[in-house]
View (cartoon, rainbow, N blue to C red):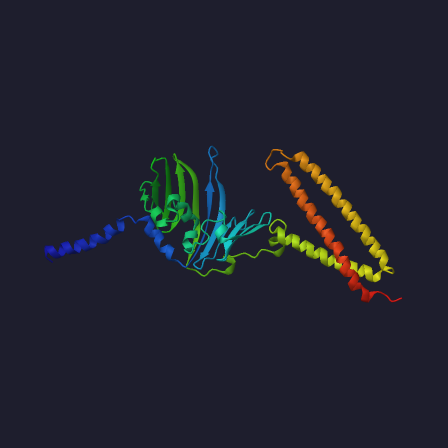
Length: 339
């Protein structure tokens, strides 16, 4: 072997070693995830508020599909669970504690969930949302280009990438597992103190996702409760009042020996009804005068308005019950005993 052949072989042997030692840009590790058709991520995040050094921790799981469906769950299997999901048409929010349920058009989400129309599943990742700097929107790869490897913080198990702000007071760190080059942790530091972190404990890429991972069935009693859907709940009360009134008055007229007695009772009930409206209206008017111009948050007049709304619904239900008596009277005629 001559000298030229030896030099060529030596270059071939050294080149892979040099390439292996060359640092891998952080954005190149995230880029393949953006091509995934499905993405699921589980983990936890914590924040602290000085001078209290303790961290409040929140667990989460998020799954997303390329067709626009996704579901984000805070504290799965724990008290205070929050679920936010989308079927591609609407955005839904359900809080297990208190059974709070909301539906939102995707165009009017008002901060319920950032970018619910996102069709890149991996961009629903909580870690990527944290790592993306706000001036960059959701330009994930652009946000990651400013990170550099910190050799002092890195070890054989993890490589630590770090980014500093212009004032050199705040910095962010991203930890990458050496074994599979997966991004597993994000940290936010300020003046040398850890303020918040997010840690990924599991990640599934391009795996089949069950329907339960992308939606949630809310019971009808919670979906249409007074708290969650007042118009439908109140409408249901009027339907119940109408059905109950029709059944009651039909039965009452059919069994009455003298239907005129039932008619007389109905007149008295209408008079009582009118008197009750007058008394309640006068009371509410007095309360409105007393509380008008009052201070507070909310001001006292708001409570008077709420009472007026409840009174209106109550009187409407009573009126509905009484009005069905006329239909019940007509329906009862075939059932009355002859004589």
